[in-house]
Length: 517
Image 1 (tube, one colour):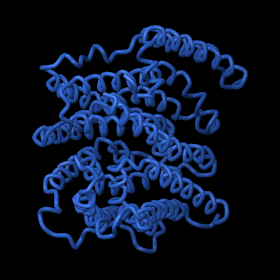
Image 2: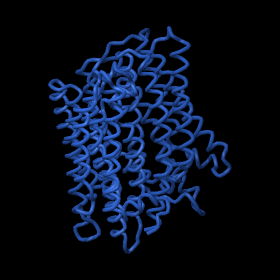
Image 3: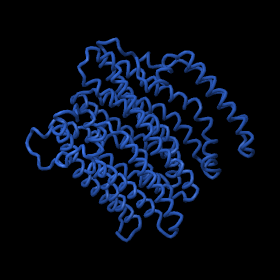
Image 4: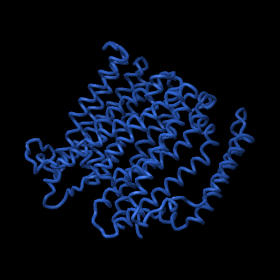
């Protein structure tokens, strides 16, 4: 148990720091850039280019990342070189796949929008494609680093790359005022990709711990150096990533196809703000949980089922508690947050309403992330294929709902469709979890519910009433301070009640790095 908690604690600590810097820096930068861009330019930056880069990178590498983290490869000891070769022979397959997907994506955009090479937007698409290739060239070394748990390297590289991207964009917007904004955004993405590439390549090429023949195992041949099962698992996860991409970015696809640039900008603004907590807390927690579940499932400990059950129970309880806090306090402070960060221009539009619904969506997103991490970590090949088939069904329902709801309710409809989609995936994962522990008493869903839910819901009612009665948009600052004090009082009261009822659980969370049990 201590080993599993050690892995979870170690990975979560570094992944949290990585996400905090890699997402915190753009968040602070975003508060500046929003005030210096038109709605059309911001839609281009926050939705269209983000969608292009995400699609190319996710389809090219997500399946290999998932599969290689499941691999039971020990990169130490006498057989370290051989194990690294086996891992990297599969990991290097991301490069040809990435080149093909990048070329296909660029060609599709040119065909769909009937672009010519003289168009600045077309040039920006090609520059973004080049940035994706730069980032993908570092992917084999990223996978090796994750397998070796070299999380500090990831922290340094991603932080430096993020800072360089923001700095490049700032300099070009301030100094090169005549440059097309599309080119500015694309060049900043190149800066990120270049830093990512040189960071990982520089570390391994100048490290005395790794041989070039191991890092570039192209001359090694024979089955002894190729893990066919790992390659097969990578392709299964890669095919699954096509479906997951629709579920993950489907709302942006629908936005680009069916909605106006203004609504795209509003959704992009809220998504960058609302998803900050997802990327800062839930994403690293999901990754570290996946790592811990996968390693626990591959072990041969006699009490393996009990360890996995306790880990899963506490992981689900923690994300559920955080999600409930957002449901309780997020909707009543959405307007105030938009007003404080981005000004009255955005707070008096649709953004606060969209952010209110996003706070509810966060709860479903958190529960789905951890439950699916468990499924993907412990499921066998047959179960993963069945999961892929269900993802296809959910994807179809999700796309239809998005198209239907965006026409009637705009960006809010996208969040409703997202929430329903997450609920369906949670139910499927819960069914798998129940079947997995059917012969064991080490896990029950009842144990995942945190105490203090009632006081959180009451706090939500009080703070919503406070916003309606006390907050005056015309006299914002004095009324906001009173409204803020009401929320702070409710939050402290809820925290006290939850701690009193869940003292043992909260203490374990606070002493997470000690991982003692």
